[in-house]
Image 1: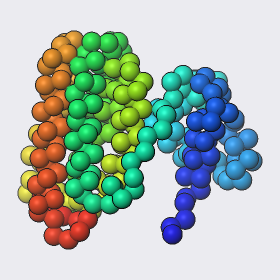
Image 2 (image 1 turned 90 degrees about the vertical axis):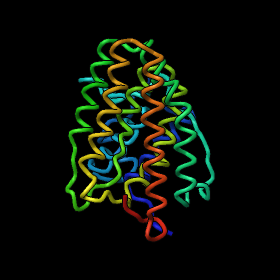
Image 3 (image 1 turned 45 degrees about the vertical axis):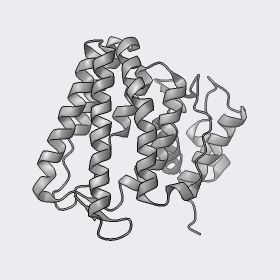
Length: 240
């Protein structure tokens, strides 16, 4: 079996402490130096583990004070490992995600603050500005953008669930699925237009339009992935 990385060991150790209640909501994480000592790892390893906790909504940094457990940290979801071993199961997970994210976008349009709407726009611009080398462009994965919308819904269960799904889906989409150079620009342009429709609906505080735009985006994403599966030349690898 492949050995876990040190950052994963630290991440899982801290995650266990959060889920067990040893580090409860609002609790401050030990300092970097303390974590380095307790786990016997370097500062770089600790920072990687904490960054992963932060990306999944488990902890939040406070300027000049430290890092604290989220007031409503994600819980635990379980999907059997065997359900993640093939692209069809990944597609099934994306179908599951679709229903939740459509409502997430609608709630975000209703509930998010002006600052959150501006942050979602900024994240879209950051993500969509990334155009990989045409010889190795991977399937576009915009998990952080979608998580920001989930946070804007002000429903911690939605954020929890989507954070979990992201852990399962992201590694699979980042490995081996290549966008052909001839269609790369059109691929990214279409995704940017879909993202733009979602953001505009949120900024206009129009829940129905936000739901429609998110459904369109995720449905199109599913169709792109199905096309990828159809074009796959070998198990776990393909191009579109």
